[in-house]
Length: 328
Image (cartoon, rainbow, N blue to C red):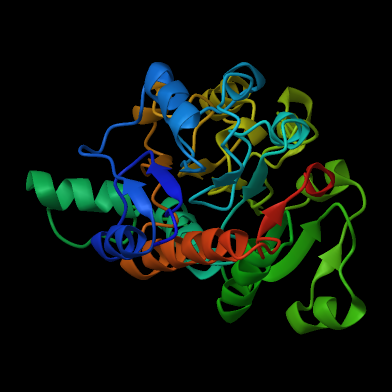
């Protein structure tokens, strides 16, 4: 008798190669369109599946998890961030949670540098002139930006992505500073010639560019609050490719409006796709639609990690990328 295959529900469209492999291995229900599931659809999926494969757009809170079927035993998240999942509530119900860490560090670091250069060198403004046919030729004082070479870069969160940013920024001749929950080893600091700041307040007040690379947790929510933003240099630039909730977005807008900051490059936003309209109108703000990890290679590798986590679970072992509350 053939063994009954594991029931897996995928909440969003994934790369075709990933969907095909999932279909080969498991009894999979794939999403027909590329829109997020409604709350009712998520509830139904959790009452049906042995394994749920959600993404960041699926808010799996305690109330929803309480309605999951008894057969749901693994939430194999497609993505590294798990702030949309109540991991503690899942654990209490005997549901494991896995994620896909480390896959998109280089992709996100590339986007961080792209946004940094876009803001400091005013690339979108120049592009707009070219697209609109308003360029009147080269002029000595036209669209003057600032160089990043020699500037101090403060990295908030020196994990895989933060270190990938440091590696790239060093190649641009930037001076690396960082604030982290734990100080790095001496040899790692030496690798990036990085200066550690125990006090985030003291670091942000001295930086020319601040890169946000920490996860969103209760302790990092609005870590950049009005008081901390006011400490920054008026010419400083903030780049955020992590989570929008780390910055008090309303306070950021006020600082930019009042000339308290030189600019911002934002790939993530406090309310997801609901962007503060004032940010769109600011010439010194560059916005991108949460595409920091959006490479074909990265998306496929994320899917491969999901598959490995599910297969390991099916084989009766601990998923290699298991998330536990103490990690958060």
